[in-house]
Amino acid sequence: MSPWYNQGQICKLTISRTRQHPQKYSMFGAMIGAITSGRIANFIERKETSTVEYYNKIRPVATKVCGMMDLQKEIALSELNSTEKYKRIKNQRRESQSYLSS
Image 1 (tube, rainbow, N blue to C red):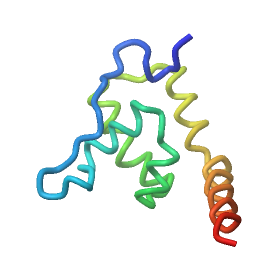
Image 2: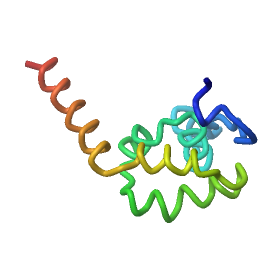
Image 3: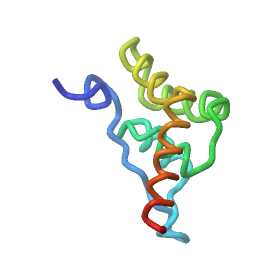
């Protein structure tokens, strides 16, 4: 079974790069790209966006663009974006970084 973000009518927008800064992603493209690729935790960490900001800014845009999200997607998003899981991912990365640098 394919992951939830490949199912149904979810739009397949990719992260779009801006012309002036090819190495930087446009905020809109990055938001949608992060959601449609299921990399929300990584995106939040990279942009240093809080959970509250995510729900207030990113999710409504994605919902508007991709259409209404069904319950399965809703659950997957909330699980992926839960604070405990986010902190655990961040701590694991920090530990692996310190291990590699020692």
